[in-house]
Image (tube, rainbow, N blue to C red):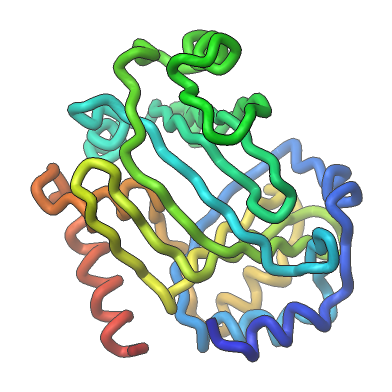
Amino acid sequence: MNPAILDIVNTMKPITLDEMKGVKLMNRVDTKYLVTSGQLQDILNGIHDYYYAQEVEGKRLSAYDTVYYDTPDLKMYTIHHDRHLVRDKVRVRTYVDSHLTFCEVKHKTNKGRTKKKRIEIQPGIDVTVDPEASAFLAEKQPYPVESLNPNLETVFDRFTLVNDEKTERLTIDCNLVFNNFVSGTSATIDPLVIMELKQDGRARSLLKEVLLDLRIKPYKISKYCIGTAMTRPEVKQNRFKKKIRRINKLLTLNS
């Protein structure tokens, strides 16, 4: 990561994890962006004085480790690839710095809304066998629990920002690496960055104004799907080939 990015975030106003819990976006709209580290610098400079940076134990940059589960024939991946509106993702996410691990189910509705349910679990357990975790999965997602296996690990560092009005939250994922449990292959999109804006759909957004000035458009990208396609080239991926070509082009330009 460009050290200048960390320097900018470290000089933003701090907000604690407890304070962040009060940022409830009830009418939430999520928008993703794929940007270079140079573009990220310009974005952060444009919003610096109007956003807080989440701070956990004195750190602004937090490490994440996420394991995505799927069926042997990758039904969750394939449903996303085939543009089904209703889809699910099952994952185990570890917040490395705070030593917390959660089993999570993300459900996308046909209205484009994402509903996330999760329970805290002990690190290292097999969620398909553990009684509490397996019961949670059986209730919250449609696939037989015994058919789920770890498919892809995503490792990245994240900044989390919130605007002064508390109407939007921005996550910035850097140093992203994919490790595939099936193929044994790894891939990275570093130094590219995935940003996700979660905002109150009714509120003005300074960030969107900055992005418009910089001619940066929204970009639909799933870390799970892109990571799977990049580490298992034999799987169905026609829909993602254009995205992978763009990623590779940006990586070449920014190497």
